[in-house]
Structure formats: structure tokens, C-alpha cells
Amino acid sequence: MTAGFFVLTGSLLGILLHPGFLAVPTFFGAGLLFAGITNACGLAMTLARMPWNQRGGEPVKSCSV
Image 1 (cartoon, helix red, strand yellow):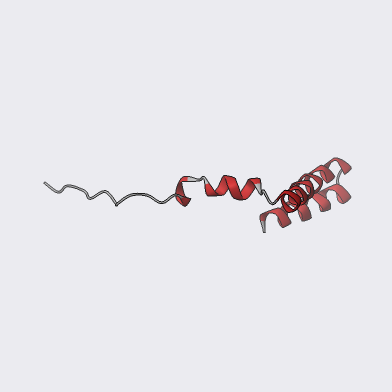
Image 2: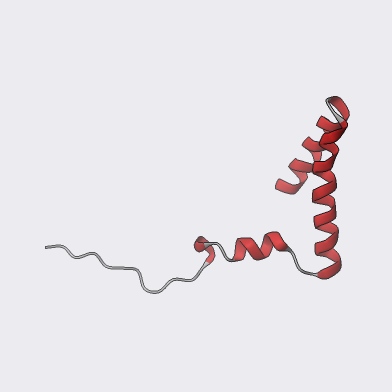
């Protein structure tokens, strides 16, 4: 959804405001093409390394005094 949003927004801004905004959908298109050809998605690899996607140990039990 995010990539699609940026492609749509960049395209509309490029058509309506300034052609320089067409660099946004070009960037995302090139990234998606690279990911498809090489089977290596940089965004997926980055998200997989985020702390909330890591398996943790046992939850820490708090001490009540």
C-alpha cells in the first residue's frame, strides 16, 4: 500500500505541479523492478531486522516488594 501511495502521489504531483515529482514513482518502480529481478527486497530485509520483528526471550517478570 505504501509503495502504491507514493507512486500515485508522485505521479499526480508530477502531472499537476512540477515534472520533478516524477522522480518519486521512478524511484519506487526501479526498486520494485530490482527486487523482482534479484529476489532481494531491501524493504522486506530492513523490516525483518526491526526490533518488533525479533523473537525475544522470556518476558521479564517484575519484582514486587
